[in-house]
Image (tube, rainbow, N blue to C red; front, side, top):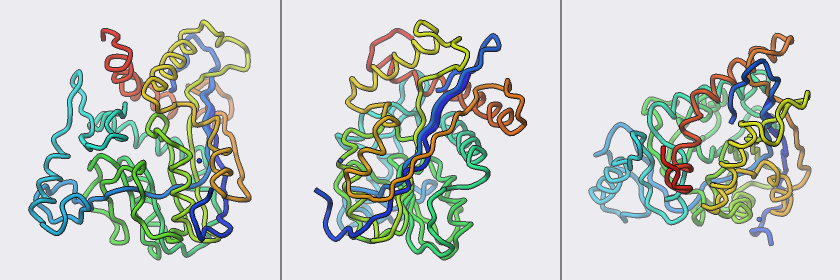
Length: 338
């Protein structure tokens, strides 16, 4: 049993002078299940942003919400940190129409699972943080939907020449980070405020179920990527597969995946971006798009040592994330009693 991850689509921006005219459940009973993943390149931050120290509610922050008044910005930051709670899990409180209905918790349990996923995906890519040929001295880099910030921290450590920005709707990132890295509260679905042609490289991954209007997001990314710059976008398919046919249409894992796909569609935020991101990136104006797909085992069934280790981490990723993926969509969207 395995999952699939699509990686690649490493597009180059030819001349963005103007904006272009768009779970893994563990293996049981020895079944070989693969969960898919997908990676394509590209993205930039959006909308109104607040630079924040996640551990200091009273810190002065730079906000488009509060004008020049430091105290008003601090109060906004404080309210954002008063998270919503459902069934014992906490969720972001970034009050924008596009961000409000997001399924993912932002508590310690979810953040630990995200860091496990970071290790698993890095292992999948042979220890690499990215695949785009960005060269040794990138100057300005954006990580959209940075989560715990672990990818942005590793990237900033590896490339001290780069100014690295990580954006998210939850201020859950650490305060002690490399000096060339900053985090911003931002909903990437809003109109971007970054300068056109400003980023050498834009990275995003695992935003399934987070975006209402993907074509618009890729248009904003294209606008803010320098000529000759790169976007890299990695996504995971939640549809489990098996080469021996043991995962049938009525298998509980297949039914679980279909249920979550249906619930996400009710929110207008697809979980199936894995199937469409290459097309959308191309439509936005990027060229030389490369796509790479990975089969990722769930569990330790493979004989190959690397795949066995990868499957072990993927299984842990699934076990730690099962409740997080399901709880909001089942209880709040589908009204299933949990």
